Image (cartoon, rainbow, N blue to C red; front, top):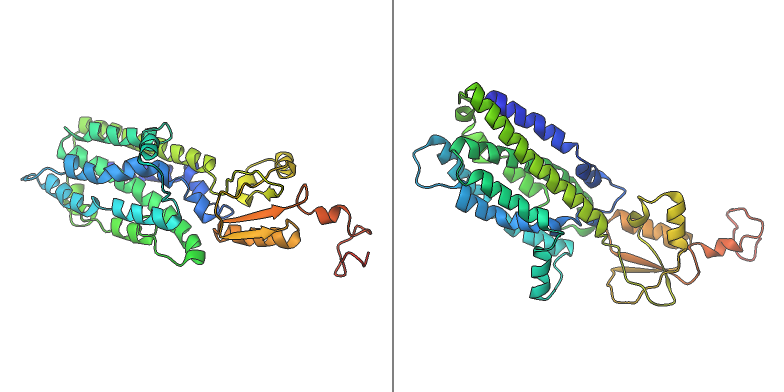
Amino acid sequence: MKEILAYIEQKKHEFSQLPFFDYLRDQSISPMQRLAFAPCAAPFVMSFGELNRSVFRDEPSDDPIQKIINKHTYEDDDHWLWFLEDLEKIGLNKSTPFTETLKFLWSEETGYSRQLSYELYRHSVDAEPIQKLLIISVLEATGSTFLQVTSQVILDLQVSTEQEYKYFGSHHFSVDSKHYCFESGKQLIEGIQLSEKDRLKNRELIDKIFTLFSKLVSTLLVYAKLKSLGETKMNTNFHEVLPLNYTKSLSKNKRTNLLLEPKVYDGNDQYNYIIIGAGPAGLQLGYFLEKTGRKYLILEAGESPGTFFKKFPRHKKLISINKRYTG
């Protein structure tokens, strides 16, 4: 089994290089925005406890591998409670009619998150304990990669919120890294001898499970990019300057056109900060609010940011005495 465990570590490294994790590591994007994928992951997260209770667990059992698995399932079947707590703290617990919630949970947006749960059931329900153990090992490897990166995002978020986030933060990462399955049972697991046929079969299973999770994080990345937490509906005579992360991926020309395009704010969305004026001070304040993950809106009565500079200073130089009546 040592060779198989080493193969899982190799696949784990490849998994950690996926674009989703580059997105989470990008500190030019606000922490809140980097966590915008969370609702899309809900079907899988919420079904994970049931997967442990109803599929991985098999009691009573005399099989030493199954005993390790059974112990592990009790450690890992209630983390969804932390997920719900974090959704509330991040501001993603929106009040919606029950029918709308059901539509979202069974929408195309969450389709792959649901499918992942089904696929894990399919591969595990009639599997031998050794195959279950390998599937759990891949779950632990992908989960460790995920939590190691999200815990860094949480550190960035805590600069402004000073709250604990159990699911996405260091608490979950620390708990998972100490699971019984990979501590007390390590020597037993490494000592298992496999035939060449079983090694090939198990490597194929490992590849399939890693592929499933690679598709999941790709789906989460698409969702996060489409669900900008800075999006607003606009409909008054004030023009909105979009949050910095919204325009970050656009080319220079497209970004300029986006900012110059007339947009108005209808007053329906809620913000912690409203900045009046998209001049130098307003844009700088917006920049620092963005870096700390605050929800803000910059309102500008002119047709674009920095309208002052279309007329002043008359000498077209930015100097310390740059005031309306000095140039």
